[in-house]
Image (cartoon, rainbow, N blue to C red; front, side, top):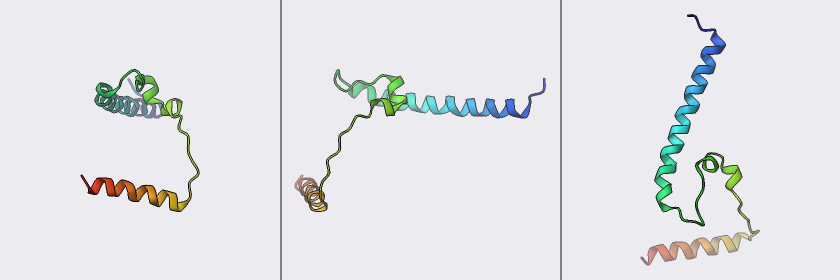
Amino acid sequence: MELDVLDAIELIKKAYQEEEKEKLWQLYLTKYPYMDKETYVSFEDFCNPSKVINKTYENKTFEEIVSEAESILDSLRTR
């Protein structure tokens, strides 16, 4: 049975996709125990983060960002 080159490429592509899905599953399993009702994400949504991401952003000045970063660093230093 001879495979056409395009068929071989498709098989290799499918193998890479399955490998990537397995890696995502393993990562999902490490995060799953820390999920609760509010933070639960299905595996399907986990694989498609564009569905899940719903972040709001604030426009902050450079000084505000630096001030927040400094306060975070200060809190880490006092531990």
